Amino acid sequence: MEFNFQQLLSDFELRELSSEADIIDHLALRTKIYKKEYSGEYVDNKYDLLPSDWKANLIGIFSNRQQIATIRVVTRRVNETIEKQLYTINEKFGIHIKPDISGCLPTEYAFQINSKNSLTDKDKSVELSRVAVSDEFRGLGLCRFAMLAAIGISILDNYKYCLYSCSVNSVKYHADLVPMMKGVTAEQNDNGYPGFKFPTSSAAVLSAFQNMSQTHMNQAIIAGVVCRYGTGVLDTSQLANVHQLSSSK
Image 1 (tube, rainbow, N blue to C red):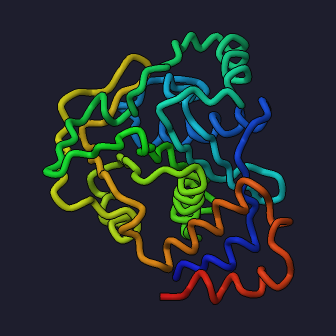
Image 2 (cartoon, one colour; image 1 turned 90 degrees about the vertical axis):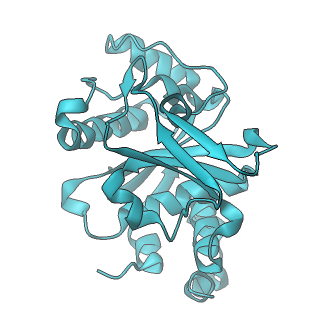
C-alpha cells in the first residue's frame, strides 16, 4: 500500500505520552510485539521497561483512544516529565529495572560507531527505537508514520542526528528516510547492557536530519508539531495545505 501521510494524519492520533496509564499501555504493546519477533533473544520483561526509558520521549499512535503503535526518542538526559511515572511502574509491577542515567545512547553500548569526520556535537544526537505496531494495523504505514513523528520531535528539540538500530533485514526499508551518513560505519561488538539484549541480527545506522529529502523533512516537522501540540495548532487553512507541503519536492 502506498504511504499516505495526509490520510494517516487524519485517521490516527499522535501523542507524546506522560500519564502512567498511557505509558503502561505503551510498554505492554512493546512487550507483545518484541517478544514475538525476537522470541529466543528477548529478555523476558512483562512490561518491556528498559533502563534507557528514563531518558526517552515516549510516543504513541492511537485509534479510537486505543494505543496501536509506539516509538521512543532516547536522549542523553533524564526525561523529568515521565521520571516519576516510570519509577512508579517499576515498583508497582516489581520489574526491578535500574535506570540508565549515563550520557550514552542504548545502541552505543552494543555498536562501535566510527566516522571519518568526527562528530563535534555528539550531544546533538538522539536514538529512535522500540517501534511497535499492533498486528491488526500493519500494512498501513504506521511504522514510517511513527518514525516521522519521532524525527519531528527531535528536530523541534534542536537535535541534528539520529541513531537507529533494527534488524539487518529492516535497514533497507528505512534507508530513504534515515540513510547512513557517508563515512560512517557501525560494527556490533556486544549484546547491550543489563536489562536489555541486542539481537545478533541487529544493524545500526547514524543519520543526519539535514540529509533528509524535503518531502520527508516537511512530513516530519508536521508530524512532530501535531504529536507535541495536537491538531488544534493547525488552523483550517494550514490543514488544507498539509497535502501540498508534505508532498513537495
